[in-house]
Image (tube, rainbow, N blue to C red; front, side, top):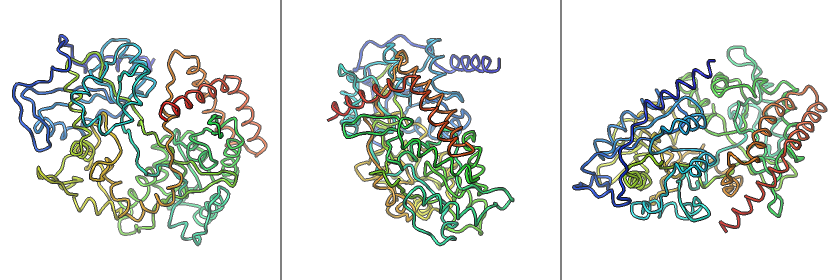
Length: 548
């Protein structure tokens, strides 16, 4: 009953927040012509009449979004005569999208959709074709997105969606990690294989069995959806859980020897009391609390979560007791039989898709704003936030820009950085079609990643992991249509893996671990994993051929 009540409440909020429709403007791409305009210091032609853009931005905390957009909303209105209204709900995006479809009430823009959901909205006729608007008003979009724009077109050459966080940066996202000061405390032994990493973590926990509160310290601990298969699988030469042969056939990890070895590897940690037994039920917040309380010697996954809940948190908590070695650092290891460690797959088409819906009266206005969003100055404003303030990333006098040296220094030296105050200036709050590649001046959207060569810790990370980065966009572009039987099979397989893999890892013996894993393999194959592998391989090869 609680779930039903929640759904009805969300439904009510949707219908309350989405503005009503006006009669459609039939003038097409010519609708943007304004009676009078002024060019502002960002190179934006300020319209005489206010442009209003309302978009749904997915799952987030509404209160946080309200606070983090309040100031940039005002800034953009005053400087650009544009009002941006961002709608979010603390519920899964696919649930909200289904409710929107059922009610027929949805805003003019939906940003950050899963590719599968975006494809469904296109199929249902809910997304407009963008080509004529981009042709007239999207020169930056055309120039910057280049080949990525063409990869988003359908088989008829029509363009119904743009991407969020498209492009490529040579930054390592995932790694095996360990606590640096504890590592130095055992003599900094070299390691390059999974077994050697295990032995290092074991020695670290032997020296630090309890935290300051007398709680047990674990060698490893993860949380639900922490991408451990992506990272650990890469150590065994898998590409985000897939084994690719020389003919580009893809085999899912549960059908590989490498997958079994991963399960046995984690089971070894568990059997010897070195792995947090709550790893497969920990929420992200649970894991963060344990990391901050110094209960983990190592981690396998995203680099930034240990930064946020490691040295950044510890500096604030420990004050003078903190030193620069109190942090997690990132290494590349490789299983002996793996040719390469593929721990950092990249998706040049980004993680989300953004559409203009059939509710929109003035698509040209939105495309014009998007064109500014990914310009060099727009990139800075929308990604770094408002300039010229104490906690701003940058300064801008209307002609030239510069870094805020105090904020830059804090990043380079990895001193305490007040991220919450920084985000109150609107950093990344209004991303709709932002890319992550470099601007013409060499800057990128991530403020803290602009100083990788100057920060010894970022440089250490990227030097260690540079050979693990690879483009896997052809795989990530695969779309699972909701009405395709393959999609149902995939969901069934995922459900089995989510429960059974944890059981294998937490088996009491290695023999039991192997049995549970082999039973898991049999179950998912009976569910149709072979059909999924055939589908994925076919789509993967088609994308490779189409993209040359």
